[in-house]
Image 1: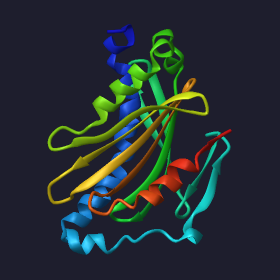
Image 2: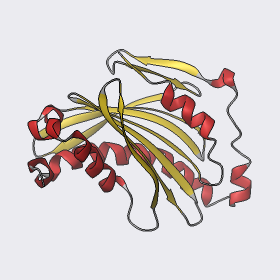
Image 3: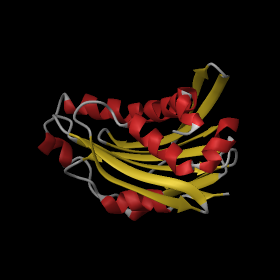
Length: 204
């Protein structure tokens, strides 16, 4: 096990941002699940029309991406033993059961020698720690690259009344960590919309 895996601060710092990010959409999904059955929820989200997609750019984040609407922007303070950092979050909850979001976080630790030596091991560990305990099941995972940077994509499904899935794309771009995610009903995935969101990302 390489040295950075012994220090959970790096992962807790990154994952807290991911979990806060996911929580925005998941809260909306659970709220809707308490008041609607799956059939009623399913009809609330149809394939997004092309005119809904608008390119959004972040100068500080050095990225642009297509969103189905104007994203909400917020910062996520993260406190660890090394100090206070911030995750920068941009998201659109298109419906109570469908969310699109991107977050980025900066840390010198992402440029550490152990992370640089084994970036995919870092991404794999981050994936493992981000899967919620309980009925969640990984249904897809794949190592990749994005603009030459190490990347990883994975998806997990959670059963029960909510019956939702989450698809992640993580990119380790030097000292910056990008996380994209889409939350959707497992029975109503609309992969074409997810592909538009993920494939439209451009790093500047």
